[in-house]
Amino acid sequence: MVDPIQIVRDLRKLDVNNPPKTLFWAIINYCNAVCTTCRFYLVPRSSWKYVHFDDAKKAVDILCNNGFRMTALTGGEPLMNPDVFEICDYLHKKDIVITYMPTNGILVTRSVARRLKDADIRLVGISVDLDDGGGMGLTRKIPNLRKVAIHARECLEEVGIKTYAGVLLTRSALDISRILKSVTDLGFSKVVFSYPQLIQSSSYKASNEMQELLLNVNDIERSVEDIKLAKKNFKGISVHNPNESLNNLVRFYQGVPRKYRCYGGSNLFYLDWNLDLYRCFTLEKKYGNLLELGRVDFEEEPCDLCSQQAFRDHDPFYYLASTLVEFNELLRQGHPLSAAKLLVKKDTRDAIHALHEFLSGGFV
Image (cartoon, rainbow, N blue to C red; front, side):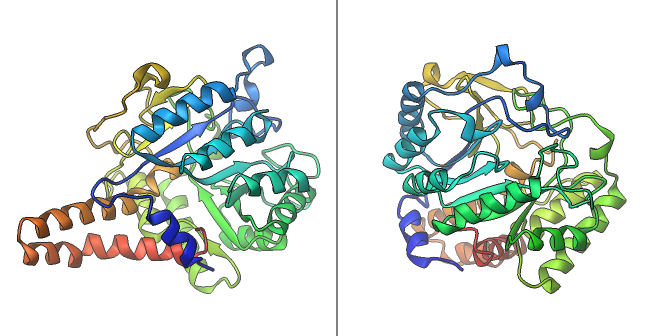
């Protein structure tokens, strides 16, 4: 259920004439799970790193001064960072909204959940796999993953934090009805589908070169149609991925240009555990260390080279924000008819519908 008071509170932090920047911040480079579709578990202990609070404070101050108003805290496993709660507290103090935090659930206890609630964490994603009859954890190799996922969800929801099941589309996860049944059996009412990623060129390691991730266009077309049907017919669960974003995923596999541009490098960025700032997860383009850069004022040429869900699912939203900026400018210049035409364009209407899907799904 949408909380209108919370939405208004968040929107008051935004400037419609300057769409806010969003950061995906990997605050740690290792994990306590073995996910074969990911490479964080391969980081040797001698190379383990995490963002310390003193450096995090400096980074957050710089982010604030550069128009960042939203961030997702990820990893590796973010709850393994010993300073994670202090980082969350400081982000909240500086009015940067933590949009979500993903976790494998292993470290979630009632006390951890209360601490996350105190730090104003509102949404936590818990990674799950299909129940294959012999217990969950096919690609994650977490003992008793089913119990881990249920316990983590219950602890978080008891304190009022919304949760969702994070499901990666793989060759063994193409039966959407079965996925949604497994997710609801775990007690989740929300699900986010992540799109398969092969090796990425940035420091991010949530990808791998393996057969399980090599989907073809028929796999994707069928899965997307099944997800759309499930959104209409499968009761009791909300799917985060808007239809427009799912359509863009199909276009990617078809080799067709996407409907909306990617905003990586202009409004969306990736920051790692060294505080090195990248355009996105996929590309090797690194601007430098945030503490040395000071200013973040980039505008990259549009890119259409990946299907990274965390970035590309934002396309319709930032398109809509950019349209509103143009709308305001046309009104300011005394062109109300041209401004009105912007709002009735099909792309704009589709972007509005995507935003409505997101809000009505209870992810805010």
